[in-house]
Length: 437
Image 1 (cartoon, rainbow, N blue to C red):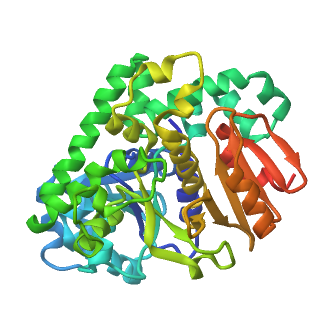
Image 2: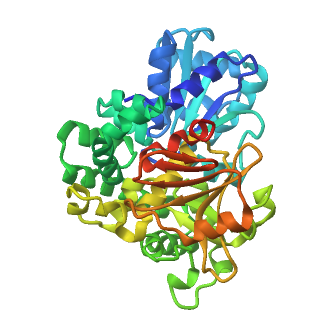
Image 3: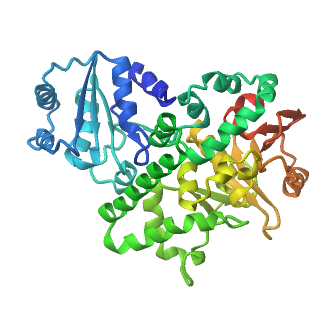
């Protein structure tokens, strides 16, 4: 498999003011594979330290945090001389060795010539707890589930991925049925590398589901291992409620839908833990779609999404037949939640810093699935399942707010009418280039 994130690591390697790189991401999203692949392709040697299954290596950091001594000890353990010019040092499962976490500060200050990448489960939680986190002394990136284009490439469909990248609309229309077929598969398999690998090797969707359920079980294990006892039940309540919350016509997250009488103030810590762990995305409502969006967001009104569409399908226990039928019902299945989740997943994957919200009027009689702030412009994105694209909400939004650009994403072919764009679901990752055509 090839990950677009490797390009970012190559850029990092070439930066003159490079700091140790911390890679965030939910469990099983492919952080270890990415680091090893990056080392294999871009360095002569790689020194790999896993603090979970090699706990004795924690002792290297116990005496002091002198970088010269640590490098010497790491080289001795790896039975190689660590040359800063051609050796990549990998710290994996970093959360298991807080002293190694803290050492990144001293590598930044005293030994910036070394190439160090580090990752681990729940680093986002450690970041916001503040204990030992090397604030300002590390570069950071987040690895997310594989995109639809990465999915195509992993299944040896690079020629189809290239059609999308090149915006070859004529050939895309010719092969439209093929794109829809693979998009349905992606809705089921999702972007977790282990699930994609299982599908590629076996072509067995039941095996894919088994892999997904194993991943989900590992998240429940994290709840018990890493969360204070008094918060575990609250975290599980939020996590367990997500499939039902997204099945509603109005997908706004309501604490009262978890348990009668539940109030937000009792769940603030639990919600923040899930956010820090990367296990949910939070999309707030804005009262007005004006610049900057952050000035109009409503902190207590939001939707919550699971980061991977395949894991959402597994947790919702959607039937396999929906994904294998020859029609397009799956795109409208589950109240359109899968199509909406797919668009969000693709938008976040293309730019983690893209401001994304949703808009609804005060009476909740009109709603736009997403509004984004891009190049000093507010762009509404309406997600429509199948090819049923009637939308009174979008029509009224355009009438009331007169956006220069508006996007409707569905199974319809690409079309442009002045500033209004029909973009097929499977092409939404290319919206930046498309709206400039």
